[in-house]
Image (cartoon, rainbow, N blue to C red; front, side, top):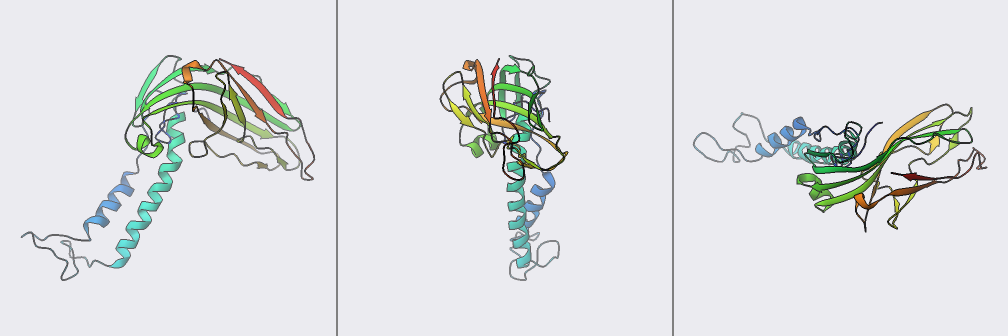
Length: 252
């Protein structure tokens, strides 16, 4: 998917590819449902009296323990959805964003410092991998994004990948588990919370795509001039090498 890097609300942080300022999605229905459940625990009648004694709320509905259980379930579901949304928000806007542009959304303010989208297609055995873009992004985080990541600043490299198994048999290739080194001297792995998931057990004739975020720890995105990416060789069903290790250098 053509996500770049400018959203980091977990999704809002890593989106810079097509960033026109797409905001992170919020499940309003879920939030409203939680508020309704919370309000039914203790309701006041028109005189301001607590209706807890007769076990009913001001809508005439009986308050029961299942309501409380539903509230807990909704909170858990909302937490799972927020985790999934983080990386999506960060990647959705990258392709429309020009280098040097700054985008503001629910996750904060993000700047695209560098991007390389002219990268040769990689073939290793039956695996064909298209690196659609590599982007260097920095962000000043706010709101839920800052709370979730426990920081108000984030610098990262976004890598968008599409991978295909052209074989007539299942092949193991972990496209989502690249190792990265940067020109600033950092060695990184993709952040599992922000990145998409690509199944390493690829069935015959299938393809997958995703965006992966490598969070810089000791340098700034604007300082990175190049990155090196390394993937382990693909394997067949007998765990024999079905291709070569992939080792490439990408310059901005």
